[in-house]
Length: 125
Image 1: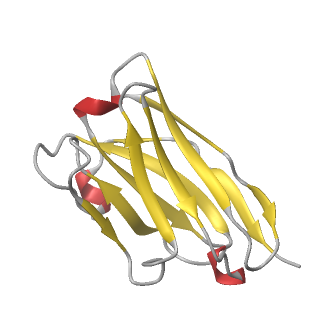
Image 2: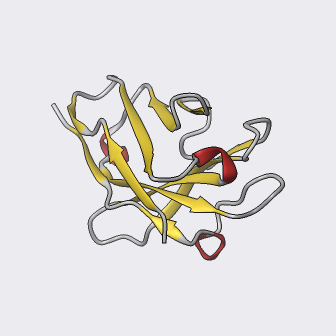
Image 3: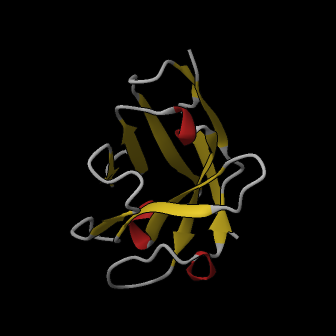
């Protein structure tokens, strides 16, 4: 199993922004499609965004489309999630995960085999 580490979470006011990062330990992230997932209290984990190995293909859940942007920096070996116009309902633990899918990406959890521990995002005034 690959080791992924998320960072960048925290407390932000509604309308604010945060940038999450997913870093790899001991392997190249460029070999994998990466997804971001979140789990709010009392709710099931949901896929919110993913990016293909090349970075040419991205997908977003309707709930974050137009507000969140996923990107990857294969030189720095990271995948980032820029979150703008945050809402209270974005409060959750955010995790990144790796998939061996060679083309495109998926928000299906079963497609991912390695997960980070997650970082807490709290949107509150």
